[in-house]
Image (cartoon, rainbow, N blue to C red):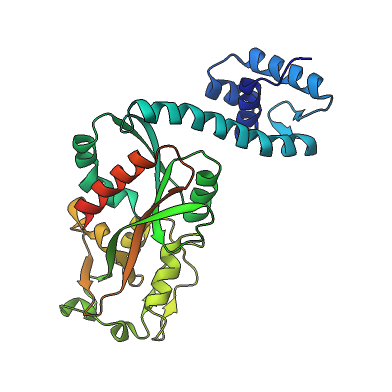
Length: 298
């Protein structure tokens, strides 16, 4: 009886991720008939249906869901075997999958991307963007190599490397009374209407923590999906918001209708760190990337 082939497990995982045979085939760089036929053979070998085939989608059966959970671990371990060999040949070469929070990546990368390329020219960074929960899930599943996010988090098998502390600033409408001040304290935000990101963004919780000692009212009929949405709402005089400092630098330094004011000491900050699996064979490359980011972000 033949052993289960690794490529068949990759096909099954791709179907689970995409919910579609055609999209799974594209991801695996094979034709749809080839992928479908291989999965049929896998089902025949196991003696159980793994995929429920529908006209426009593919759903996992209960057995398929259990098999996919194990298949992910096997595929990830196989990839790590390849990476171990590659890292021994040249630890600072090859592809590295790095994910950033949506409130970090667009604002940090313009300052460090060129420096990373110059310092580590043989590394090819594959950049992703996820919120904290999905990022940690993908990290533990081996789908990404490193996450750059706000600390602390539940590590549980992960290594965390602090990178830098980022100050919060206050964004107010240009005509707001607070815009006339050079610095602000949390008490100055008393009774203000606070604009926040939607649930799932850790920046939302951090902003609420900064304002926890004074009465503020969150705008109940609005939840921002991005910092740029919040910025535009501030410009429309819908309220005020807190922004991380990097979101007010470079191309984001000037926003029409918005005044940015720093906090007086003690300045509220969030700690940004890099996180990767303790078992990762790319630890040397991940540490090198973290060092470059830390040096230039500070």
